[in-house]
Amino acid sequence: MLAAGLACALISSLTPVKSGAQEARARWERMCQIRAEKFDLVMPEAMHDNDLDMWIVVMREGLLDPMWEALGRGYVGDWAYYVFTDRGDRVERAALGVGGYRLEQCGVYDEFGGADELAAYVAERDPERIGVNMAASIGGADGLSHTSYQHLKDVLGRYGDRLVSAERFVSDFRSTRTAVELAAFAEAGEISREIAERAFSNAVITPGVTTLEDVAWWMSDQQLARGLGSSFDMPSVYVTGPEGIVATSTDRIIQRGDLLMLDWGVGFLDFYTDMKRIAYVLREGETEPPAGIRHAFERGIEVRDIMKTTIRPAATASEALERTWAALEEAGFNRIEFNQPSADPTVTDVVLGPHSVGNWGHGLGPSLAFFNPTQMTYELRPGTLLSIELFAYTSNPEWAGAKIRIPLEDDAVVTERGVEWLYPVNNRILVIK
Image (tube, rainbow, N blue to C red; front, side, top):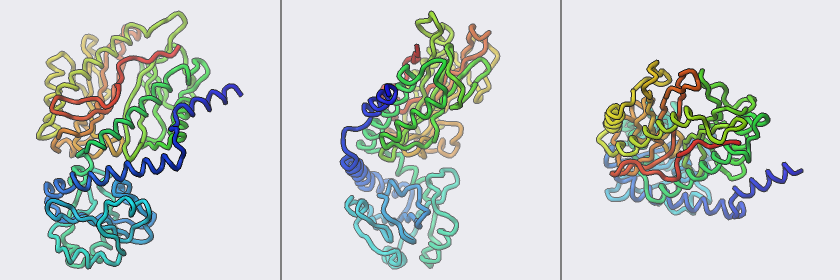
């Protein structure tokens, strides 16, 4: 009974005070504000930059486009279309075949109609280039199925020959942030930080009793209690040793002397975070982590400090990355391929993976990460959200010289001054007694 009472008290302390209905309405109102400002302030420029006269998003019942949430949700019965038309300084918006209270009361659409009105609607506006969600590199911009593509071409007749990929447009529209978006994402970051750091504490972990999956399930329970989503499914809670990762979110029992890592994110108001935390489980008689672990962590912080000041707006994300690598190498850090540290005990090896973040844990805007080659060619603009991710490998005498991989990752916004954090970032090794 005591354990159950403590669990209830903990969940209560993390759960919003508002009733369910009040919280639902508050979140809906915030999403409406985000959509209104995105449609008014961001979409016209994104359409101009990508030479689009119209953007059509196609959906069917049971087959919603990844943009459904961002565009207002709504009930889709059979075929449905969101249609956006460039009118110069403003983008005209129509929802055809999709409706419902939340979509209609949001007030961001000019016209509602039936799906059978699409052909006439498009012909009246006579667009030259019609963007649709087909994308070679970005899954979030690739929501148009083959069947839906054929259907759209049939419905549009001669305008079906004017369909082009909207991949770059979707990236620009999503990753160009308004002030209210930055505020919402910062709140999501603080929520995910709060849960992660509590997970790596004695409030959740009892050495010799608690398993890795116990911690991961506790975190999942917090998401459920607070109405949060995730783009990464099960939180990754793992143990690192001289041979690398020992176990991840399994029934492996957490022991004294373990070096724990955590990689996860939450979904809140259609924003998804991506962050890591590190903890050490004290052995009997210890009051702090061993010197070798502390040194490795400090070297990781040094790498992050350089990244913070050198990642700035650039013509391409790749250009910003190379500037950062030049600064790191000048400071004595060694550039390596992922998980291939050198045998040299005198250097700290580094892998960089700062990637787009925001509407998915791995976002669709400009990215400095090696696993986003197309997005590395995109312009890195002020206001871009990035997950500042790195891996620093430093020799540990207490592991017979084997290198500790220190992963650091927190979310930030790109500014002319460098990147700026949106919540308190990881500045210490968490200690479990």
